[in-house]
Image (cartoon, rainbow, N blue to C red):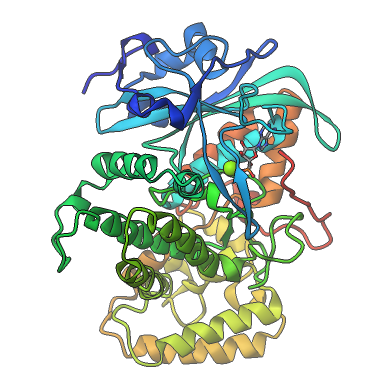
Length: 515
Ligand code: AMP
Ligand code: MG
């Protein structure tokens, strides 16, 4: 594997820039005032074949801050449209994002995009900038999701600058350099359907299929050989990926906050981190985005919203697929795919092994129990592995969690609930259920549960610590959190505070669309 020490030597493929110019506007970034590297990820750099030495160079900072163009790249802003909060919003586009180009990495291509590097023809009322607060949140969240094993755009670097940026108060500017195989969204398709430009819609669909879903051309599962068949298969594939992504989000208590169709990745990646949140106390109707007063994007609503968004994608594809029936059939695959993915994940989270009759009720009753107490989402599942009677002896549990001390600092499972007797009653049923499974070896079950139930998630109050430190010019907290979030399943002695729920009575942090 070749590793290079600068952007110059990386191979640029720039495939998006080879599409017709209808899809974007070429334009340079607008440099920031005294940009400073806050953090760069050597793990992400490796994906494009960039060495960790490269991250400390001025040439790297110049590119990821938008001071100079990426050598060999083609800087552009893409156009797209979308539905925002269920309403057709018309043209949106990269209002503060610049695609610098596409790089051939050791294992695949990645596009490099800057968020916050200046205005574009799609900025509308916006200033083309992003603030340090929201950029730290996007940077950390991208790494947190990767650590959890959830498909996401990646974050290469975070840059801070002196430029004042007006939001509710005056803040300072920042740029996130992020990467993904593609930033094409559902809204990229909606754009050309709304414009009645089927030829451009087909060009975009062909581009996405050729690069990311070549199997859609194999026509293997379809009874038809119609020339539009690949577009039906594309929808089917996106339905599958989106359904599993929703299950991934649901089982860690992740709320995206702004599931508009322009924030839905055609690759099934978590895209555009704004007012997202990992739940603390469980509430199925939890709304993480202060601006979403109606709760359209509440936790429990996310799968249905994803399905609705897929309908918009299907509606767009209807411009090039003259038969609605196969599109409808593809959409109907969402619910079973989502439920199957949830079943797999919940079975792993509870260490149930093979699915049995009654498991659904057992799990539903756990959600109800959590709801009644607003029990901490993350700790409920994490501590379940250690519930009394489920492990043989307290001293043995130490082996499975380096952080015996970590555990000692956290409330045991039953104490996470207001009514411990209800929790005990549920536990008794759970014990009975485990008793019926062939897993004689409880150690394997405990280990399995700890491997899928994270101890550390990027809770809002944790991210806030990194933001406040960064705003004071101290970037060490970001590094500390990155280390924990890279492996959120492994307890780290001495890091108890990062696993704990926010203190009762701590001021509620409001997170809005302002970014
Ligand atoms: P979001 O809700 O962040 O996904 O953004 C929705 C749309 O608004 C996209 O077209 C963004 O590019 C655009 N946008 C958001 N904030 C800004 C900003 N500060 N300047 C320019 N465009 C923005
Ligand atoms: Mg967006």
